[in-house]
Amino acid sequence: MSRRFLVALGGAVLALSLAACSGEGAGSGDGGGGDKPADLTIGVSMPTQTSERWIADGNSVKEKLEAKGYKVDLQYAGDDIPTQSQQVDQMITQGADVLIIAAIDGTALSGQLQAAADAKIPVIAYDRLIRDSKNVDFYVSFDNYKVGVAQATALLVGLGLQNKDGSKGSAAGPFNIELFAGSLDDNNAHFFFDGAMDTLKPFIDNKSLRVKSGQTAIEQVAILRWQQETAQKRMEDLLTSSYNDGSKVQGVLSPYDGLSRGIITALQNAGYGASANKMPVVTGQDAEIASVKLINDGVQSSTIFKDTRLLAEQAVIAGEAFLQDKDPQANDTKTYDNGVKVVPSYLLPVQTVYKDDIKPVLIDSGYWTADEVKSGQAKG
Ligand code: BGC
Image (cartoon, rainbow, N blue to C red; front, side, top):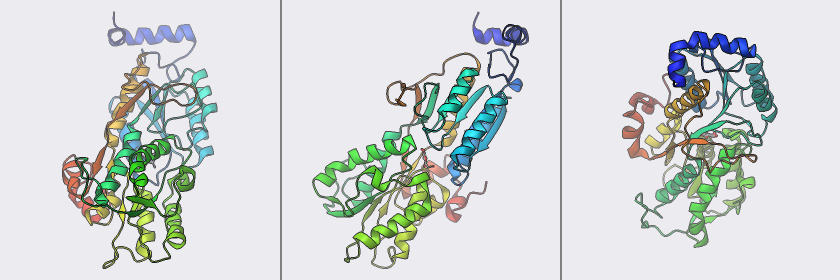
């Protein structure tokens, strides 16, 4: 008899006998496969509400789980590592049955994950891999290396060095560019940067691209906690230190829309984007509404769209599998080594969005409305 059939037929009996055997009831961290959804709680730990993608992720996961009848404990940690540790600790002591965690610092949760493992609570790393722990049971994310490739490709296309179909573009350069990366404690930042640099390297080597500041190592270009203001400050510093000789920056590799907006502000304050002083080609990620408007207005060049609705769906599928004592289905079992083990993963594809793609990709799919794109504000 299949587990699923057993659950449907004899859920109550099974739950009772499990509780009798283990001394644990619903909400004890042992989903048990027999408990009713209403008796099961999923702890969802998100990093911050300052970026709209994480709000959308949190809401989608919560809504989808609640629609299936589960209880959800959704917490945001304000980008503060001790707060996130505390919130996860609390979810464990309050008897969560599964944890879904998007970590602030991918290396800071080993203690919590050990406590989760001791209480037999499966842990799903959400979008950001949790490192240095054997207790990460599954990972749902996008193809993060390809995000970096797509960002670098969008930079090449924007500059005219390459066409969208991958063929050689009509421009020859040399172009001055600057590079930005995300937070070093976020595993994704490294994947994005590696994908981007592998793509840009041949163009840097053949001198059609020049990083005028000379800052090409991830440690030199990373922005702690993905902060917009820090990116603005670094761009201002770069303009002062490397472009005070009349030369112009023509392209900026930016891995996230929030950073792109900081970079664009620094450039605008220095006179870029006015009259003949062209705004450089600036990339991005996440299709945040303020940035989609900037793309629509011709200020930002591109973003990478990652459909958080689909990611939330995968997290829910994986969570439910664990609750039914099954292993979630992975589509990648090689790429994501967290330093202790390779974590089975489900990776979703990503899509580059230039101005022309806003309608077909973002509006027609219901991600943003035409009004939101026009105003640059989410209606909620
Ligand atoms: C996510 C990106 C996001 C960044 C900043 C990364 O871990 O994968 O989508 O732009 O964090 O929030």
